[in-house]
Amino acid sequence: MAYNIVLTTAEDIVAVVDAVVAKGHEANIDFISEFTGIATGDQVNKALDMAVELKMVVCESSGNYYVDSFLAKKLVTATTDDEKAVIMRLILEQYYPYTVFKTRYAFTRSIEQACRQTKTLCSLSANERDIRNTLISIATYAKALKSEGANLYSFAEEERIYPLVEFSLINTAVAERSLQDFFGERIYCSLDIETTIEPLYESFQKAKATSPDTRAIIIYAANAFESFLNTYAISKSVSLSGKNGIIQKRDALSAFLSKKHKGMIDYIGQVRNAADHGADFNENGLIWTITKDTALIYPCVVSIVIKNILQRDIGIIEM
Image (cartoon, rainbow, N blue to C red):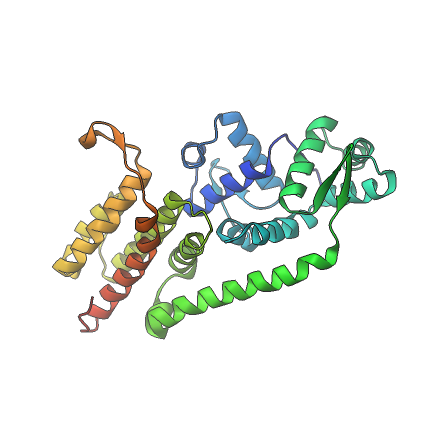
């Protein structure tokens, strides 16, 4: 198998993966660049190249990206730095050039020699400095590698990872169970897991972070809601062809929605637009700030509206 390491940082890799997961499908370079705010297109491309290299994202023949990795999805919704480190480490330990690098360092006790030997053994075309900086950045993010000064490093003990993995998996199970309990079996089973349940769950997970990314919370939950509208339209034999965004799709489904629910959907759509559409020409070109309060309540509103719409279909009117 051919390998290719390019110069990038762990933070940029995580940022582009987050963008692809948030988009849900057909994430292109323009969307990823805007979502991440990474300064240059070259940086975005290199981060994406390494995300593909680590099997965190997949590049389609069209040039768009999608995520087909459980660990990648969990990485961008982890709530603490320790959880993120654990998941990144699990990803990294599956990457052959990294395991070679770690083994060669154990023999040589020299980062430079380990990188040189890794370059040779894995037939890497990148220069040694880029290989060194990229591997050190990712391994440091994963808390697998620690600088001891004087260009000396030490690798973390393997035993440390297992309690944190168990804790992360327990957190995931509890969060998924909470959504099942909220929706109930009938509604939960009627929702598409990949396009509605997963991004909604990921939105809730992001809301638990110590310093939550308010825009990402909105994007994830809004994508879940728009996907719900798509499947709801199919169930009602309504065509959404040419309908873009939540509000246009709401209008197409107007005959099947209550006046109150249409008003709530308008809120969901307007907040999504504020988070995702940049400058607002109706506000003299100013950009809306998504407050923490709005971000934290938003996935709750989305969940409630989905449940209420489906409850109304069987004659239960509730708010």
